[in-house]
Structure formats: structure tokens, C-alpha cells
Length: 224
Image (cartoon, rainbow, N blue to C red; front, side):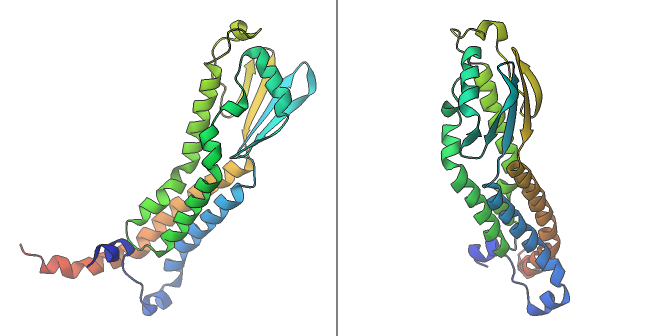
């Protein structure tokens, strides 16, 4: 058996497909749905931050998409100046530059996984499975970086001191109250991750017996 055949895995006969149609459709449907959700998530915010300050009684909001910020960015940047926080434009520059193509690649890998009937499917599905965790870890890194690199010349830098804003939930920074929430895009990516996990489970149920049956003759013919 060639290396390519081992990677692609066994083909499903028409008889098996007719006898167990849902068995083989289920992992494909789950991977396809996960890929679709990842693509749709590009259109939606991944993170939302609300800030309440005495100067702005109605509050300020920032909506973070994977490659850009929207909302009251200029106003919040002005408040950040007093605390000593750096500019949003200086954070996650590389991540924002590759975000769209990277997520499209994750979706593409999931679609490619539809044609893999072996354990190698994990290599194609794993990036999408871990993507929400990677996003949260990267966001936490940048929040920590901002909170621990204050401009000492800022008026409130000494009063605030180093801090780490929470990824999600409320926080108090000097005289400002913040509330960070996951956006719908992130929630879709999280659902996609769950679908990928389920798809891997059903993929194993569908194709593991076929792989074992395919390898059995080789094992029987192997010398002792």
C-alpha cells in the first residue's frame, strides 16, 4: 500500500454506503458545518468591550473583528492616554494581517478532511479544533502586554500600576469600569470547534473498522 493510500484511507463501497448512509454522512456533515461557521464568523465581532467613564455617561464600546476594530476607538484611545496604555494600532499587528486568510485556511482544511478516511484526518481538523483556545491565549497575551507596559509619563500611570485586564467579565481600571464579552464570531468559532470534535468521534466510528480490515491482510502476511 502506498503512502498516499495510507493517508487517504480506505474507500467506502457502495454497498456499505447504502447499508449505513448516516454513518458516513455524519462526520462529513459536521466538518462541513464547522467550515461554514468559521467562514461566517469572519463577518462578526470576536470580542466586545464596553467602558464606562465619568466623561462619557452613555458609555463607550469597542467591537473587535479578527482584522479590525470598530466603535468608539478614538474616544477610548484618548482615555487610554491618561492611564498610559499603548495604542490599539500597535497590538496584534501580525495576527490581524493574517487573520482572514488563516481562518479561510482552517475552513479549507476541514473541507479537505472530507476526503481523508484515516487517522491522518486529525492533522487537518486539529487547527480548527484548537482555534478558539489560540484566539483566547493570544488575546490574553496582548491584554497582559498592554497592562504591563504603561507609559510612566501618563497622568494616571502611577496610580493604576501594572494590571492584566480580564478577557471576559468586568474590571475596574482607575476611574473606569469595563465589561468584556465574547462576540458572536468567537461564539461561532467555539461551536465550530465543538462540531469538529464531534466529527472526529464519528469519523473514528465510521472508518476505523475499514482501516483495520484494510490492514488485516498485511498483518497476516507479515513474518513472525
